[in-house]
Image (cartoon, rainbow, N blue to C red; front, side, top):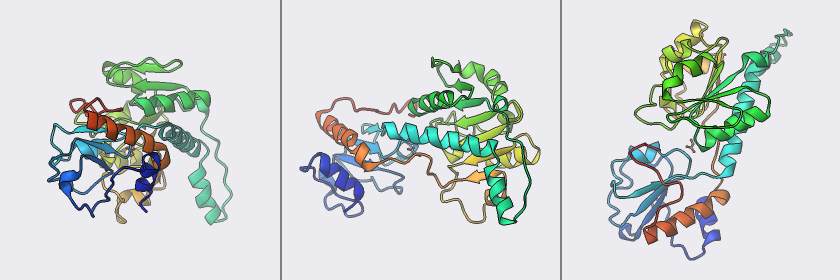
Length: 297
Ligand code: GLV
């Protein structure tokens, strides 16, 4: 059985669940659970009341014109999404600091050459996006002895983190070596990771993008690496996924690539929240983690 269907039925065995594309009767569907569904798949569901994303991101739902504006949207936010992301980002930082990728290459060639680790003082982290995941990552990095700055649309208050709002972007960047993007994808944040931003970082600078591929202007990253504005990058998300085999990024030794695995939703953990939201949607009450369509997250 589909692992999601199984997990949901474990919470409530009476649920009536159909797994796309085998949906017998569109009229009976009131609640949909989606992740990167193909375009037009949600066309023609007259009784749809709510749709939940299977992940934290909801950009795939917001850009789907087949979902009427009256349909409520929600996302999944569970503890393991935060811990996984914290561990991923810490690991990316440590790989950069300790030259992990370079040593993997050296081993292949039986080549012995030492590099001094990048000192922690040159690894002040700046997190763009201080939502639930961004704040949790900031706290995890603090616990691990990193200095952390945070930037968000409206100013946040997180103990030990130097927080900036929209107007403080330049100062945030000038105090940051390692820029971590954890922003929601909106009109305002699309393409935010561009050359001007990279140039304002405190050298030596490094980029980690774990949000969405379209936050990054890809050619600006290549230019920034070639001109040593950035020392390297760790990317988990891409404009086109899977990243095409002929993409420039594959051949860059200073770009670490992971296939959108930084934080993966566990069906068992998310099922209770999804079932609760299904019930809330039937009663017409506010969903947990409901999305504000205006804000875009
Ligand atoms: C993953 O990319 C998510 O949005 O949860």
